Image 1 (cartoon, rainbow, N blue to C red):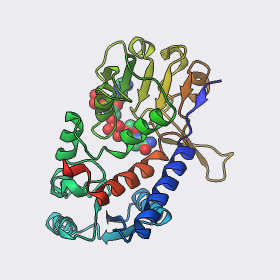
Image 2: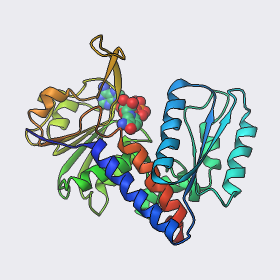
Image 3: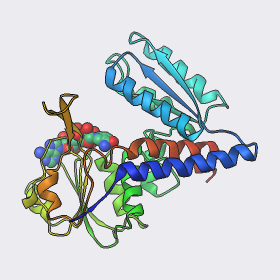
Length: 295
Ligand code: NAP
């Protein structure tokens, strides 16, 4: 049986470590970390995500502010809200929940966020700093994966890491992090995408396979090397009448069959997903401490 990399347990552990740090800050009369989340419109999934982030802040003792704006808010009005939060010294971290309505430019809004408060790690400043190996806010999903590899003491130096998917929020930063000259890292990295030829052969040569392409059950056992570490980022709802909810969650990897070959694997649900909020809390704590941009 492979090691099951348990993101749920690990994220709870990280949250309790952060809560302990907040108690220490309180005891010393220091500044309590404060996260502001901006939510535009009434999209159900976005409301759930933002709600979970605000709740997690409460759990660890952070302060939080939720700014809700109508779907019809103009780009200019949203930019003004971001600017006000940028200038508010009480707020350490700022996230703008995506997606935004079509009439608003995600690039413009992202670029408006002060890098020092960009706890989602989406601004060009933070992506650039991460790429240079400088202190940076790393985006939640890649940071969560790095943390899982660390906490499960997965060896990475000299390994071949294959990343499937090159999105700005997962695959591309993951490839940079796995290639950097520190632990976890020092891998030889192959970044693959929809134009890659011979993907099954390339995947088969991976010691560490990070799968983030958004296609349910894409990776099958024959694409995986015996003993590989498999990280599944995909999340998909599929109909399941046996469940009360009527659906269940599956990943980009066919878990049951790939688990028979892997040495370690993340399940879906309960793998990478739960780490996202823990990463955001981690970044917000860093923001309150003001350490990232002191260098
Ligand atoms: P995305 O922006 O849609 O990017 C998908 C990437 O996969 C693209 O680079 C695409 O290549 C590549 N791709 C598509 N089909 C392919 C194929 N047949 N062979 C090889 N590469 C292929 O996706 P994303 O935002 O990175 O998300 C990926 C998955 O992770 C989704 O299921 C999403 O829901 C999930 N996700 C989970 C979390 C979490 O917290 N667990 C966080 C973020 C995302 P091209 O660039 O050539 O188009």
